[in-house]
Amino acid sequence: MFATSPLSDALVTVFGGSGFIGNYVAQELLRRGARVRIASRHPDKAFELKPLADLGQLQFARCDIRSEDSIAAVLAGASHVVNLVGAFDGDLIELMGEAPGRMARIASDNGVKAFVHLSAIGADAESEVDYARAKALGEQRVREGFPNATILRPSIVFGKDDEFINMFAGLIETLPILPVFGPEAKLQLVYVDDIAEAAMVALTDPGEHGGHIYELGGPERLSMMEINRRIAASQGRKRRFIAMPDGLSSAFAAMPGTPMSRDQWALLQPGSTVSGEHRTFAALGIEPRPLGLFLDRWMTRYRKFGRFGLSNERNKEREARGVKRPGAGAGANV
Image 1: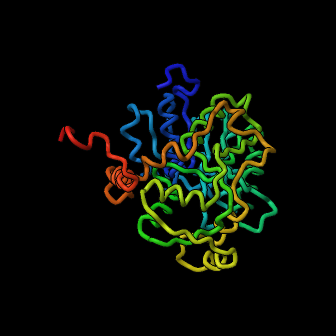
Image 2 (image 1 turned 90 degrees about the horizontal axis):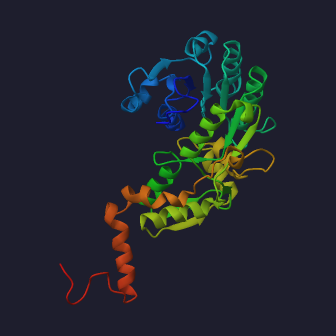
Image 3 (image 1 turned 180 degrees about the vertical axis):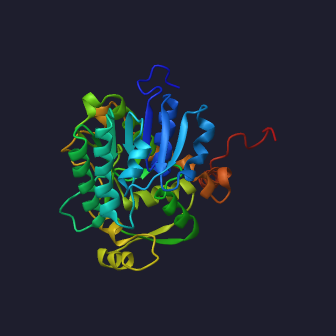
């Protein structure tokens, strides 16, 4: 725990705190001694955080972000706010556009010290994609309601339990031949713990970071094809990847029941990298970590023989090259 953290004993309301990113943000707040209020439609999804909190340090509140009364109730007594609400279906303009404005305005009226709003690289008021327009509107409404808010725009966020790397990992584990949509699209995948750290820095010093937009991307620009090949290599699997033309990809995304929606395909095509027009991790004093730092360890459960799978494959490669395994041969202990 950070004994001298400025967030110690502060009450922080985390909208959308029961989601993937919310779990990591809440953990960082708890480590810094903050009191955390998880505000969500389904706060029970965050109950796994209970063992990490001291007595009275963690609260759970059911919240309807379409209702001003509901928002006001979960902001009562809070000194800091983080909004992590995001969605790819439903009324996106309401959930990610108008609702953040209500949060910001009510937070300002309540004297909240710092407001951090999670947007996304690709937020664009002129976009034909609902998701991008909703994110842009959310930024606008937050700035109107809380001018000193900090806006974080991450690229695609990865983590051990994400729905991005693990989706491809499951497909690669199962299928010998896989199509790759947007094979040349460049992504700066960003580690979820680095996003949580960015939120902490912004909350701690709103005087320095408030009123600014931060585009947050990882240290590598990887194509979708490279990402798939890296996952396969970390699983110790040989797979054939087929680069799909944009026309077929678009048709696939328009079909019901597919793992990629039309909006997700439209967002993937141009890639997701920092533009250079806004502040980045460097201004927050954070050095983002690359996917390769974690991938081999995370892919263990997808290997044929679990944690022994990759070593078996490497031993086979050594033997094919005529290289003996360590300890093998005459006199070796068995």
